Image 1 (cartoon, rainbow, N blue to C red):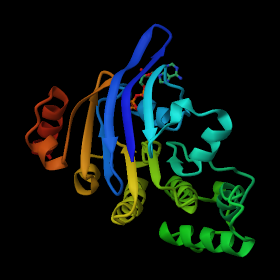
Image 2: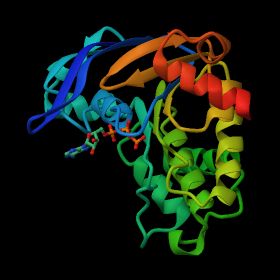
Image 3: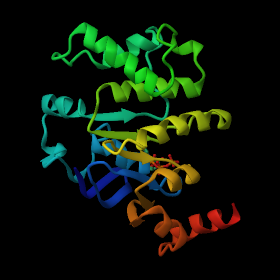
Length: 244
Ligand SMILES: Nc1ncnc2c1ncn2[C@@H]1O[C@H](COP(=O)(O)OP(=O)(O)OP(=O)(O)O)[C@@H](O)[C@H]1O
């Protein structure tokens, strides 16, 4: 479904991505882990060009997203959900309208259909009763669940999640991880998630990609990468698991 090839990105003189290569197949949950600053968020943001890479290929369903013009890119993004670290909800809209807004380009759906989609998405994140609330009345965990519902509402073929629990109080992390775990359990979904949550990654990932210093240095199922690592980063995670 997705092939990332030789992805490069620099900020000024500093090269952040140094030739990132990986694939994601239909139905997989793939998790990117690695030390702070190694380029994980930059990688995931390059996939739908929230960050423009300097070079490489992002082949999604056979088409290189880096070759698309702005209109084509906006269309492709309808098929690729994105969940940000900091929720990106619109404060003056209710929870319901925040999600409705994401559906405004879905001209094939009637208003009633759209309302049903919003309700279904909110139920999937266990916030069925929160339609009329405003973001300011929600906890961080609830805001992130609304943001996840907004991404789900588009029924994207690929969902990208950039450290979805990074800006949450530790007490609120587990409610978001539980929702994500139930979403990954659906075999039809394809997810690429950047996270530092080791236990979560171990439980839900079909495949782990370990990044270090702008490259993927190891990849494989969690048992292989965390229990029998070959890379330095993998060995650090292995020590963490042993200490746990
Ligand atoms: N817009 C930007 N301008 C300049 N430097 C940036 C920008 N975005 C990211 N960087 C730098 O690029 C490097 C990689 O950042 P990135 O967010 O991809 O790392 P990460 O692996 O996701 O880290 P973390 O786990 O801490 O979120 C960091 O040194 C960061 O400061």
